[in-house]
Length: 267
Image 1 (cartoon, rainbow, N blue to C red):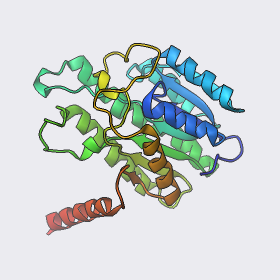
Image 2: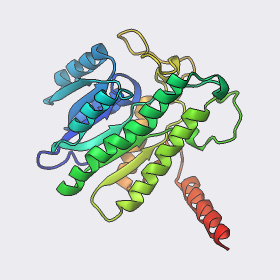
Image 3: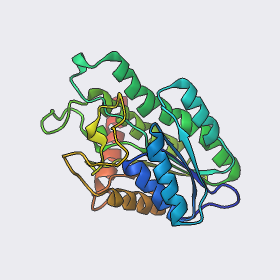
Image 4: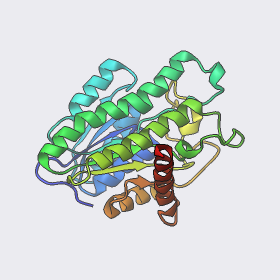
């Protein structure tokens, strides 16, 4: 994967304090990218920044921000629009799991603000500058739960709002990629399944406490495998990346089913 050209060799990574975001930032730094790390936990960002600087010759910025806060989101969007941003990883997300009828409205709003609004706003901030330069990469992190639909809870979580928000990310990214087809931009929606991070240790109102990253009890796929899949899919020009798939046949079948549905509805 290219590290970018000219001055656009900086990757902005949201949700960088742990899990996929932190690991992806480390991988990009090893590939020569400078990084802008965005998350709510200043201590975690400082630790990661120190690690990246110690590992190699890389410039690291940290932006402490809660992307559900309009002022924080505007501040991050301004940075995302910078001429040096050649890679945007929209990874920040919260789950807000629980029965829909009992979900606190403030938490519901926070899930939508972070999982839907922030993804859209930051992509909008970044894409025009990438188009003007003639290169750039956008990766939006969704979830395999975007495809879970009517499957019941147990073992899946109660996830109506989370699943819906990640369904938006999938449709938004696929549609944007089609709109940008023929341009030099690379666009991907990354749909990991259960991953060995701390994501399930909090519903999202507040960050997981503590300075040391942890892993939720459910375990899951190693984070490195998720990033390997994402980078390989970028190199292959695949828009939808579902780590763990042996081939892209199910994604092709989904596209064909959508076409059949639209075609039948027009008759």
